[in-house]
Each structure stands twice: as C-alpha cells, then as structure tokens.
Amino acid sequence: MKKLITLLCAVCLLLGIISAQAEEQSPVYALTRIREDGEAELLGSAALVENQTTLITAGFASLPQGTLYAVGSGGRLDVTDVRYACDGSGLVVLTLAQPAPAQPLALGDAEADMTCMALTEQGLVTGGASRVTMAVFEDDGALLYTGLESMKPGAALVNSQGQLAGITAAAFGEGINRYLAYPADTIRAHLAGEGPANGRNELRSGEKWIRDLRVTPDKGCMTVVWNHLPRPEDADDNVYYVVWEDAGNGYYSYTEVKWDDGEMLFGYVPGRSYYVWMLPAHNGQLDTEGISVREAVKVDTEQSAAFTAYAYQDQTLYMTCLPADQPVQGTELLPPAEHLKLGDANMRYYLQAVSTYQVAEEKDAMLVIALKAPDGSVYSMLSGFVFMPELNENDTWNADITGLTDGCVQFAGGVPGKYILCYYLDGLLANECVVTVE
Image (cartoon, rainbow, N blue to C red; front, top):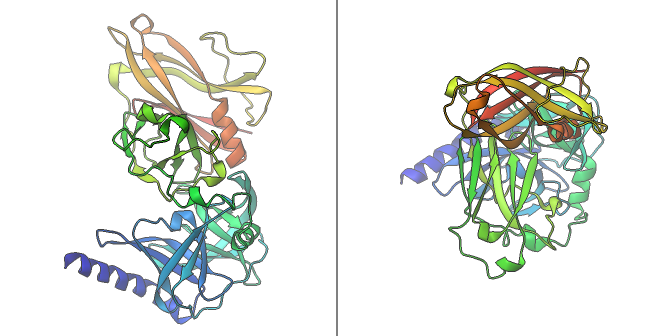
C-alpha cells in the first residue's frame, strides 16, 4: 500500500508541474519512470514529431528499467514501444498508446539563437539557447550550445520558424550550462530507419548484453566484476568489452577482456558519475555505433579529499610539451611551456612534477591524471605511482598525457582558456595546476 501511495503522489506531482504546458498543448513531454520499488523518477523530456503518437528523445532520458510514461498535453500517456537508434546516435523513438492532442513539430535547421523547451526539477520550462555551434560527438556532427540551468536530457531546440532543430543528449560539462544536441539530420535519419547499423537488432535488443555487473569504486579505481554470473556456452569463442561512460557528458572508454578474467578495473575521477556495462564483440571488434547506456549500471562517486599520506607534497607541478621525435629521457624535466597549444600532432604533452614524501619502505598507489577543459568536460587516464625511500626528498617524475589532450581536442575543440590539470593518488587529490592554452 505504501508503494502504491508513493506512486500516485509522484504521478500527481508530475501532472501538477506540467499543467500549464498541458493547457497550451505543448509538443514537449516529461518522461517519468516508475521503478520496481514504486518510486517515480523524472528522466528527461521528449518532443512530439511526425504524428500524435511518436516522441523523439535521447537515450539518457529513456532508461528501460521500470515502466515509462510521458506526461504533458493529454495527461499521463502510456509508452508502448521504445525503439533505439539503428545508427548508433543515442536517439530513441517512443510510441504512445493513444494520440496526444498537441501539434507535432516539423524538423528544421539550427540557428545561432533558438528556443529551448526543457525539463528541469521545476517542470517544463522555456528559455533561450544561444552560441549554437557544430561539435564532434560520437564521431558525428552535433550541436553545442549554451542553455538553461540544470536541464535534463531530451530538451528540444526550436528555431524561429517553430521547427525542431535538435534534441539534447546530455550536459556537455557539469555546472556551466553547455549542452550537446543531435541535429535535425540525425533525427530525420533515425525516424526513417536509416543508418549502417540497421540490421543489428540482436545486439540492440539487449539479449546479448551482460547484465547484473557488480561495480564498486574504491581508492580511485572502479572494479567491475562478472565472475558471479553464469558462464556463457560460447565464452571461449567470444571477445568481450567493458565500457564505461562519464554520465555528465556521454564520453565513453572501453577495454577488451576475456570472460574468464572475471573482473577488471579502470580509473575514475572523484565526484563524477559513470555508466558501466559489458557486451560481447561481433567479429572480434567492438561496434562503437552500438554504444548505449540502456543496460548500464550507474555508479556515483564522492568528491575527493586531499591526499595527505606520507607527508606528500609537490615542490613543482606543471605541464609542458616536446616534439614527438624527441621523447623525454627518464625522469628529465623540461621547462614549463610558455605558449601552449593543444592538438599539434607533432608534439607530445607531459605532466611533470618534483614531489617530496616520507616512507620507510616502498609503497604503491593508483595514479589517475585528469584534464578538465574550460567547458567542464573531463578526460582521465589510469597509471601507477611508487613511493621509494631513496627518493623521499626529491622524486622527479613525468607522465605522457598526450592521449588526454587528444581526447580534449576531439570533443572540446582545444579552445583557448584555462585548463585544470590534476592528479589523484588512491582516489585522493594530490595536486592540481592551471594551464593556459592560447
């Protein structure tokens, strides 16, 4: 009875926050999930397109666990079908059980300034979307824009002609109101059922995805365990991949594993949330167009305290670069770069430090290095750190972070501004420095 009361109260709340929009027959709907425990959860929003029974949204706004409803013009409408993008874009088409009274949005071109129709904790709201530019997202074009604060995924970008120009995937960077959206061309292709992945329904049905992973963050490393699951009959013939994705911006990484490994780990940046999932590869290669968070385990990590063990501190910490054909020799430190520009294929980039500490015997720690771009996106790598008694007073070290800068340039554009380069030891913040990119 308690669960039923909770469910009814939650639905009433949802109906209340969108009542004004419903009276105006808004084409944007709030998506809510009724979980197995009876609790209602606001996931995001969706836009009515093509006809009165078709909604388009982003994968982040339509996670499948639980019963999905659309709330808006016409009240609470049942969702009878969820179709994930055959082109790997992360878009989702929802089919309503009964026609909605609102007028569907036609698709149109993006403009520099548009209207954003979005769901926040306050309900469905409308505001400006400006500084709209093209960006790279999931190896394709996307719209990068500045919008309303704390929007949930699935927000609709509408141009001056009242046409749908984009559907927001997720926040591009936490806390700065920058968002990525799938443009109209991508939406149009998905609605038409086009795309190179059109025949991979077996993978997209979820039947081949590995569920019920155990994922635990500890000391800067996320441990992913599957050795408690039944061993597949074709495990010896399959290659598997563990995929993890920053829930704040949708950027993913992956690594190949064998089923009999039973577990693996990756480094995480404290204070951020991650989606983690596992799937078998087709033809021995990961199909990156099949990336989706719909079968993922979501893990929230806590903010980091300072690393204070062994009286550890840095005398020097900075970033620099060197021509690719002149690698750093051993623990050689180069002078800090006065004029740093990311994205130069002929350069290697390094984090360099001189650290002091006090240990009586050799000790190991997990090292995670992170680069935070001005737009709020974060790129990280996992390594290791060894505390050695003979280097107590003068441990000179460097780390090649070219992979981080490459990822940053690919997704954030390597734009000028202040970048934060930081590193963590056993999940605790050791130090950070500000890097100016010109």
